[in-house]
Image (cartoon, rainbow, N blue to C red):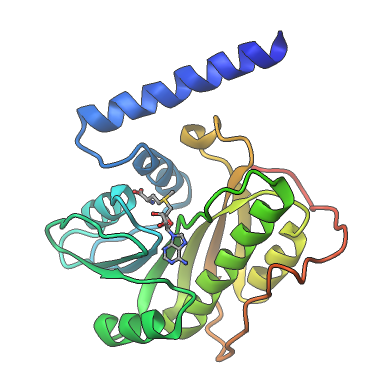
Length: 227
Ligand SMILES: C[S@@+](CC[C@H](N)C(=O)[O-])C[C@H]1O[C@@H](n2cnc3c(N)ncnc32)[C@H](O)[C@@H]1O
């Protein structure tokens, strides 16, 4: 019974943001997750240069474009084609491939103030496999930071929560002054998804190799809860 009720609440919640996105001309309800994160953590400033990984259909790109206006520079990368957004550049490609990374470095031409990643793997329905794939994509987002993020820059990335979280947090804690795990109201209906908010990049020159999915770490206990 509790399950049914929870599902009903989640569906209403989902529908609320879905309708709001339609009404306000945002391409996805995910836009509200990023707005809420920005309101809480102060991610964007006018004129910022932003890289958005896993950007299709473009809800986060719209928010980044609005919040870095005027003079912001926003570029989105996705496996899938993104319908054009005024003032936003896009690259179709897989960020796990060197050719996409090279294209991003070439097209971006400079350093980013903010790296965003809402990348999600194709859901296999096998919880620990989906979690491991999600962590793997996060490691590629961290690699992008190593290549392109300015000193003091920020990273916001989505991850499906699970037992590899401490390994992922360790990676970002070694690179950023502040790391918080957060679940914005707009994402509360998707129980396993959380956002890792990283601020104050140290900008050390180090390029890590993303862990392979099979190299899953043994049991860890996540420290602290979500805020
Ligand atoms: C939840 S959607 C992003 C929604 C987007 N933030 C928005 O607001 O419209 C996740 C996206 O990640 C992309 N993605 C997954 N793996 C990727 C990869 N290796 N390289 C680039 N994009 C990837 C998927 O194609 C998908 O469009």
